[in-house]
Amino acid sequence: MDRREGLVTMGGQPITLYGKEIKVGDKAPDFTVLTTDSKPYTLGDSGDSVKIISVVPSLDTGVCELQTINFNETAAELGDVIILTISVDLPFAQKRFCGANGIDKVITLSDHKDLSFGLNYGFVMEEKRLLARGVVVLDKDNTVKYVEYVKNVSDHPDYDKVIEEAKKLI
Image (cartoon, rainbow, N blue to C red; front, top):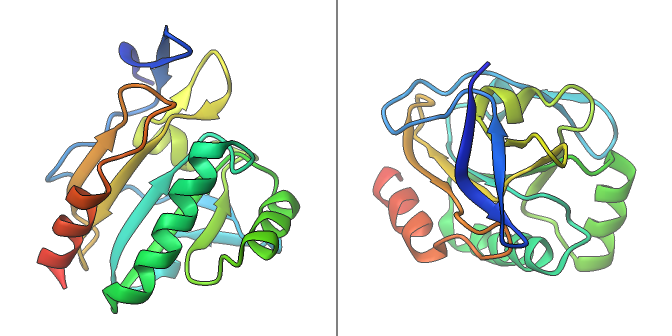
């Protein structure tokens, strides 16, 4: 499995990302994560829609909360786009978060069990066993059309660029 150092930082310290780095043009690898009801969810469960995969370290942090709320609000405007938010938070914590914050358009998924998504897409922060912040946009055939590994984990992704790329695929 690939290890990449210095691609992202957390608290000013370089972090090692573990897993295969995903790139534009790659066929999106499958993954198995858990729904808020602890049921398995794979990439195939998203069907043939355009997908935005929003990756966050933990929904219990301010930037992750805002990122998820932002994409939840955006989802209503995009039509045939599925937005997945993936973190290593436990499914019942994600369910509580969604209920408390009115998250009803984004599908929140937990990668805590096997880090299947994180390893297949290169988002695992080895030192923390959390996912680094980022976004992946897939077309209807699950080809990667945009990927962002946010340089500083405490910064927001480029929301405008993500939406622009998704709208090109609708």
